[in-house]
Image 1: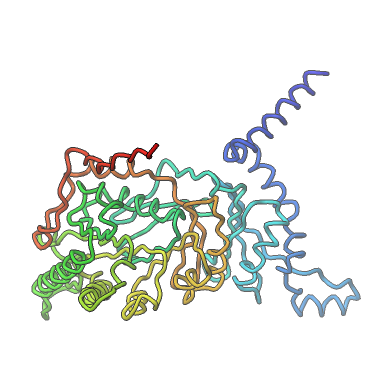
Image 2: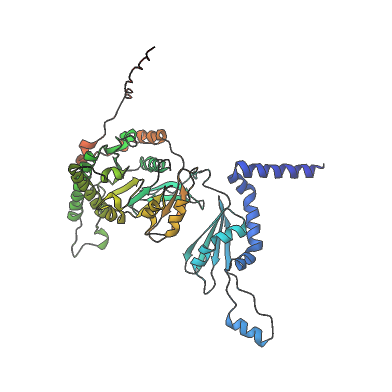
Length: 451
């Protein structure tokens, strides 16, 4: 064999090995070039096959008839730009008159097959312009977050989207959220990721974990308050409501609404207050909402009504006071009792991991998109951490959270323990810091069997 043939065999073998073991490296080394050539060469044919073309204008048809010429071909939407990315390609397309963005989103699966790529998504950038994102490989199979992410204010990077972009959560834009998921679906990993990313930020973390604190107690050094049973949770929620009312009094006294006050100095939330008067924002994390909503006797029912009423008030009025609510659970529907539906209506952010039945998915996305409901039911068991995120405008996207262990979350909380603010209203709920591990309960001695 000649040296050229040997070199070719080595390159092909290396490409196949990279495609199997390191798809991201394969894409950067070979995939981008092959995909770009394929899109450029077959673009017009693919648009025609996917019914994304429009007939020629009436003027051109009339001129063809007058001059006895062939009927003009279908008009293809113009490809404005083709730019490579770390995980795929981005196509900027100008639609023809008569086309709309829904046609491209409905043809996403056909485009995926035609371009021989893993995933195709589309979004409308501005009127008449569509951006199609092509993903060259399964980015959710092995989640690798970019080394640099955009962090600003209370905006944190939580997961990787199926189109290769980073999924962010901005608490000032989406103050309250609901996260659903069955056991072993990755819901707890998502919660740890949130706490880990918020640990270095100037925010108070408050937790309600009615499983005796097994999920949130390890992060005690970074928590300003923690309730590990339903009774303390009801008292904690009412204390937060009292804090919210106090903050509203501060906002009202500092609004300075008068005829000679510039518009820029008038505020209706804490973000417009002077920095020395601005209270620290608070994130309330409820680990399992069902433990607050269920009851077995009259006393527990009264406690449940106190807790749910306070939660609804925080979700309705807490944003302006800098109080954000994150609720986690396996199910979240009307079977949990009065007030649950009202509470769900206030939770703008919706995230659903793998669920055990379709009705659980409908609890999260039934009022957003039926396609998101179907996508949630298709999450496989072997993909923990995979979830569907829905938005109030009907858009949705698949994401997957990088695996975050309890130790990683605890290390982040311990590292930034000095960032933990002291809230006087919640002083009695401050979790104790354990310096030594608890001893395991003694086990009974085995009874010797009679001879």
